[in-house]
Image 1 (cartoon, rainbow, N blue to C red):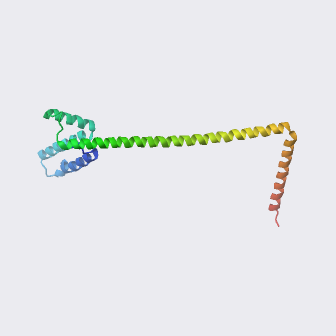
Image 2: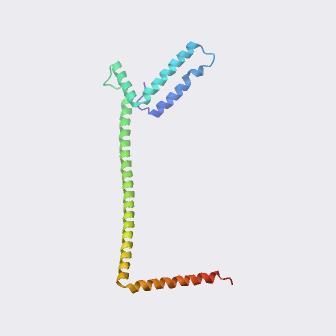
Image 3: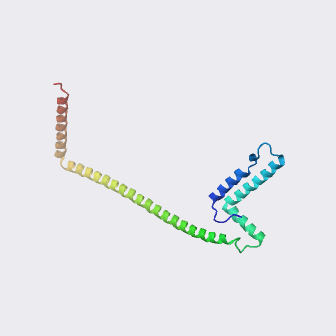
Length: 174
């Protein structure tokens, strides 16, 4: 019988150790056919035990069937299981609480990131609206005062000519 406190990793380690000890290939070439068959049968039983013990549902079913065979359904098999069961329940509660706290922290972090993204998009939209309103305002001013538009164009041309002259000065050999 295996204690309840053994976790799947411990069961897997024990299986690997036992499988290495009892594998039929370890007998060597001089082993008789009956020895090989016995070793194969023993190894197969170990494999079946591992399959049952590594799956929690199969393990519970096995424990229940063993309890009905011994007639002790209501009693635990031995006292250490009760303590281990209480310890396991305590660990399960702690792990569940930790998982809930972790999930809550993750949700808060995700919500904070979503809020930050929303604020960035809102700011981007606000800037785009302001730029559009400014452009419309300038267009309206130019429509009301056409001489402002002419003056702006003239200043742009003069600035372009100055830049052109400066670029020529730099490109002339000395």
